[in-house]
Length: 320
Image 1 (cartoon, one colour):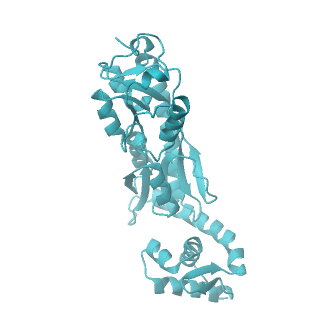
Image 2 (cartoon, rainbow, N blue to C red; image 1 turned 135 degrees about the vertical axis):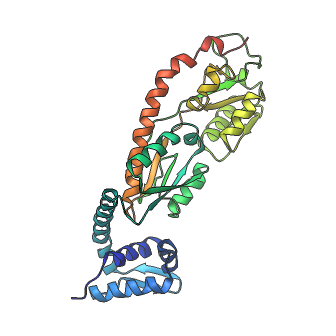
Image 3 (cartoon, rainbow, N blue to C red; image 1 turned 90 degrees about the horizontal axis):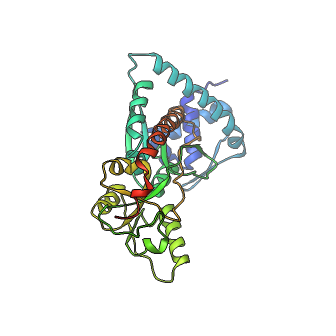
């Protein structure tokens, strides 16, 4: 029997995932002929044809479909063994790279804690970080250009694993200079007297806010969507309008009096995040990093909960 190796199985799974020899070659940082050679060697070792090649389209044969799950299991075990060996070796010559994508909310909250914990637990893992909107992060994850994405999830695809993160409560905040009705809770109509600063148009919070306001009022709401949290915070600090922002992001501004909470009869739903990664092909580093991210995020949420009574003072949040 002709032997085959892990590299051939890895190549087989990537070709099956992408449906393309060229894309598999790009992911492996090798040439398309090298990929073809590996697949041909695996087919010769197994004595069967694994792919049907039709111009630029590559499809699994029936024999290839039967090999898919066993190959995934073998590669998963091999990758875990390799990760364990790398973690135990202080002189390993290879450094793994985690391609991490995060939403901006995470950057302003627990990302620094996570990077510190990741370096402490996996010193041989380097991190390439992309900060972008959830829609972009999802596309990059599905295209295998990211190993792990922390985004407004979950990502409902069979090949994606999602680990739930603690939610982020959204609060209404404004500059102390804004004049609001002097009562404990303001109404949506009160808020409509000012521009409403929100997340970008393509996000879930913006859609929910727009549907609520257009459903309640005949007049068109003045919503200022911002593509970054930094821009939203800047506009709010400058008194341009009232913003719906994560409490964890603005708690320092509230504590030092630069912003105040506006208690309203309605507020948007909490932001729900997941740490999402592809399980096909398996990626033990992404899986472990996602679980570590969940631990760090829960620890951050616990600290934030302890601070909340100190910063959320409704009696000072509604006017002068």
